[in-house]
Length: 214
Image 1 (cartoon, rainbow, N blue to C red):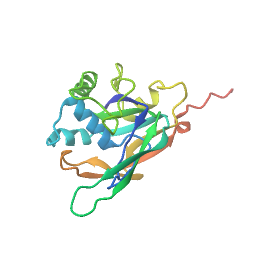
Image 2: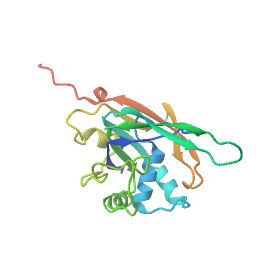
Image 3: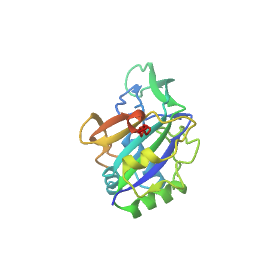
Image 4: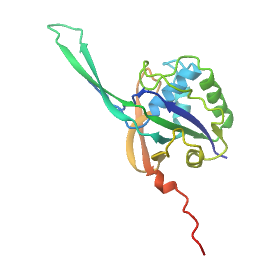
């Protein structure tokens, strides 16, 4: 039987980079799998050198319901490299999402494992953040009724909206679709990430048609 743990990701600022290099720090339009697993590892108190807990989390199927699309913003940062020769100050472009709200789900057949994660999210070992240490949740990630005895898509579809409006879309891991290079394949200290596919469905596709008169 499949079980799903649902989590609330709501904050004034969130950043989910998957392609950041040097002075360019990007963000995806919804939470990355490496970011979600990193947050859970912080809740569980998993050390950066530990690999096995990360790989077990990465084996779970993830989905995201977008309850409120964020507004893409850019931070102004200056950086200065240390090394030989004259060092000029450079501008670092760092992107983030403002006012986004997501419902994130992890699917597994191991209910006890999901119960342990849910308990850790309620009483995390280390502070939780959304992509950067300063981007903290505005509401608890932990949801009291977040553990569901159903599959990922069903759980995301049936949970009440987290905002006053309807969700806009659902992004699910799938056998094909858009490629994301954000699936951890090592400890976070080694920073190695593998590929996964996701497919995005608009909320309209999940609407149940109104019955028509006979």
